[in-house]
Image 1 (cartoon, one colour):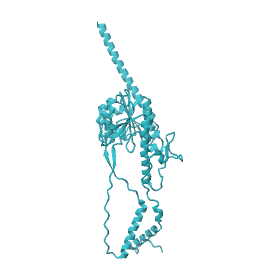
Image 2: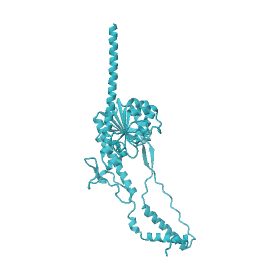
Image 3: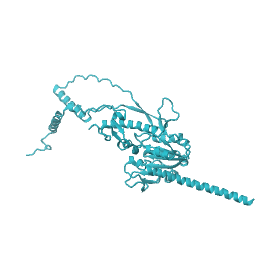
Image 4: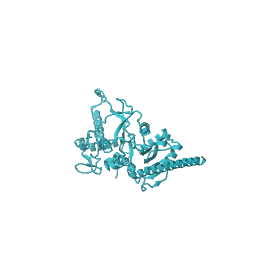
Length: 411
């Protein structure tokens, strides 16, 4: 005879007792000493690449200095949050490393924002090449996407897991300088000052009053609570408490959109360059379109060409004007993630800038994969503009010459 647990003879109280006995049996087999060893370690990490025992090799790849292996995210199994905090700590070191490259390799300098900052307020900064404001011909403005990346970076993941060329803006800056551009590197995510909140100490709980419950019932209750604590401990393994912080926004630079607008008003619009070129990745493209909404005529008069990579903009949601849409069709190109070969024209999703394939389906790689195509695009647009200006100049000269000739004949 087979007995089913669904049989009506088994009352809910009986089934509950069976389940509790099973749970007690499982808990009795847990080695709490072994479990204690799996406590989440403190969030204390190295402060330099050397202390992390990593370094960039001659190919710009991050490698372990002893084993030569790439970075390993899961340094400790089953401790995802700790591994993530370790990865973020390394990311902060990478940010400082890229700043050093901008200053030492690219000879760029910081410009503090706001330009009229006071001593006690939150500040941000951008990077400028020596001739960013004085170059009379060409200026390249680089705008990254959103997230943890800071000035000089496209994607932290690529820097750590692939190489510096694909993940940073260094190749774009180096080539631009070689081709005679001044360069501005924006920093749209450095828009707040993060301060640690002071610890708040809670008063100690008052001692509990003696219970009138029978001792046997109280013991069963304590056992049940102890079991719950064990289950909680096994699940969360005594996680570390994170430091609470508050963010103080940078004046007039509290978002990517505000930052791009501010840099345009205080730097780009005052630069000497006759031809301004803009390259924006992901959310940076949205910030550029917002700039056009705010400074449409200025952008049209100064910007020669705009290269976007997997841009997050939306001309309908951002309510762009018909004039902006028409201008973007003529002066912009958006390299998007796609399985198609590089530069393959794609169907337009909205009536704005043409879309072409970046030759990769990975969003974060679209800028690097489009590297040569973007500079070729800039050169072609500038050449066409100069040819058009030459024809206009020639026509003016011809008209004046004809006018003078006619006057001479009249005389």
